[in-house]
Length: 514
Image 1: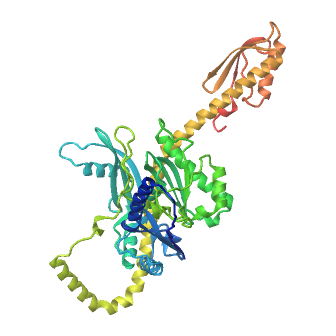
Image 2 (image 1 turned 180 degrees about the vertical axis):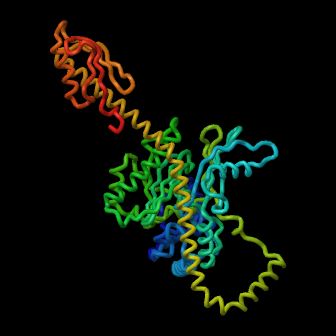
Image 3 (image 1 turned 60 degrees about the horizontal axis):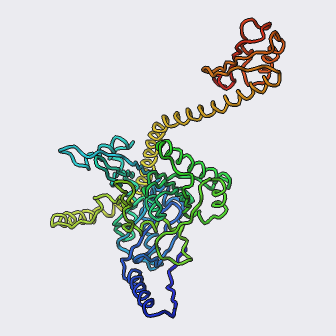
């Protein structure tokens, strides 16, 4: 278990009266914000570790982390909520961090997010109804499988941009159950990728958050996390070079996906890359990634006061949660962009006041439980095992449906990318073919009048000295022996005793399967 706490620093300066007064006012504001501000406890749960961070105002006070045994959390899904709740409770007791309410991250491995452009609703409809209708059309899974949340991030005269997020119900339900075991009623749940974008605090950025069992990629444009991807991986099965290549390729494919959807405004190659997460402390891995990728790596510099010993990159998710509500709207363009502060906690988990009927029903339920408790003790272990198997089955089915939808969605995009590369490669090949045609003609003393690209073939209008059919014949043979064209090369009429005409060549690359 790793933990720490902030230690205040002191200093003395000899100042004139005016400067001293300004310094005093600033110090009072700083101290009041630091020690009298609201205390916020954030919880970041990953497959391999739990991280807690306590802030007051805009200052970090305490932090602590503990590693998890395999099988408690898997693929971002809590398989044993009771065991995890006990661990969180013990961690809070040992660190002195107390919170009956908290803000927690959700692992986004199985989540879905889309940035949609939604027209203003017609008469008789609400914007909520229009957004949910668009969400049902775009998201591959139904509302019975997902908790859906949305937030407007930009507004225009006739339409708005809306960020829609869907999280599998079992992912949220299991996390809420775990926190309640620890005596915590979460007031806010948020995707870790959203918290990372807030912690980085840049209008344009790439974020690569690397954990031992998963990694997150976030593309931030105009302060909005337009693309958020969380990917599970078995990094222990990969060598150092394999891990670097795996992460770099996933980042490049994500950028290609964004650029293919924004042909008029692709991502700037100079956009900064911020690397966070537990494995950001692996300097060899970070240096290899920096050498492999073309994006400049920038440090994480959140607008919080924190001690030097705090590993901010590892607590980036917690820091982003603590900064909720602190970002101002960005005046970009005509409509501007709103800060993303989406709460994924479903309404069913919001606090409620019990009625007399609720109390009466609860008494009856407690009495019934007391009567069947002996039977419950006998069957609880079997029920727990069945529940774990059901969780794994639900997660597998959810992932399978998402993978099918993702494959179907990527097919037209991959075809467009392949066609683009084919056109680029064809242009490079034609340039090289023309260079060879002219070089051979110059070497043999043949004059080339024109070169035309006709479909999959190239027409060469050329001639040797008048009557010199031997040189003309040698030029045709040289083109055949170059290996760049299919043989035999098609000669003009009158060959082999003609000394001018049009020679037709067909590049090898143009043949099907070539």
